[in-house]
Image (cartoon, rainbow, N blue to C red; front, top):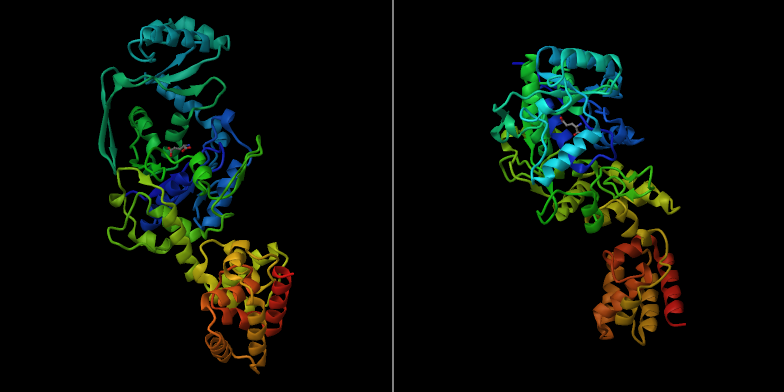
Length: 505
Ligand code: GLU
């Protein structure tokens, strides 16, 4: 069997959509499962759509995700260069070959002339198509004489090279996910393959590169299925063996109505890009999974299951497990709905699984953002106590800040609900009890405070939550005596005093 070689071939036209990340992931899993190579090729033939920073962004995104390429831009390899703009000189010979062998032709039609044809067709409620029925009446090397064509080429008239579909031919794409997909050539437009500025279009460059890079399988998004018949024909025209095709289902909006777009993410509060992206022109910032506090393995696990399943109920799968379990047969044909709750669930699971060292390091980075430093052992203690409540990395601060700094304000609603006349006096007494437990021991302190609460027939919920408001600033957090033992009795006393002073001035 031919060696498995697959590629991810993004165009650097902006940040990488999470659907593109999934395409790359499936390619990676397939390559690794089969001992094959995974290649990064940058398809930048359309210079008008080039966006500065996009290529670097793509590379950084995969570095963050831990998905490694074997060859490609930024890595090198025996089939380079891997950026199409750097391969520019090699495409002309292939365009020439197609023309010489009757598979393509020169077309000199001006944009205005084509526009007029389109309008003419529209007036008759038709769509203009450059094909076997219209070629003869247009300005190209089929309609013009040999001399006219030569004269135009010699004069340097701008031209494009178009593919010449044979009329009325059924073209079948064998797709590993969808089975055979057949379309008649009469429905297809003679696509542009090459332009007089020496640049190939996506179609020509893609096929030439896939062939010369010995790509065995083309695994890409469903949006490329309409291009596949042309690609199949190009392989035939060149006399090359075509790779196998697999077109992946779309990623859909959470409600299933249409393709997941950048706007959905902003509207529904989840990122659609792996990393944060600042548009170089508008300055608009789009959120990224990394900056939103996702762990890369959670993103990978979540994406892997959007359109594929292992055939069992298993959900938690790291990259190595995915490599073992992945199969193209288990990719679904229908679109996969994005599920924010599931994404959150995966992230939570992976935070629970993170090693102590990694937890501490993530924790420290969040604290540094707030100018707070702490001993690793203390961080470990707080992390163990709190990680169960954490879904996203920034919550390492949001959910635990009171372990490091006293609350600056008190949740007014909690105060209104819990803080009653007499609360201050009871808190002072409870504090005295806690201080009298020498040395401090959370169980003894807890038991004695309970005796006080019961002996005075206090409302347990109200009084304990008032205590909590003083320490945390809100009616939330883990067991109160865990907090006291973490921050210390002295700090507890000063927070109680401060709360009383602030709430009952
Ligand atoms: N350059 C195309 C893209 O941006 C690649 C499509 C393909 O994989 O053939 O997705």
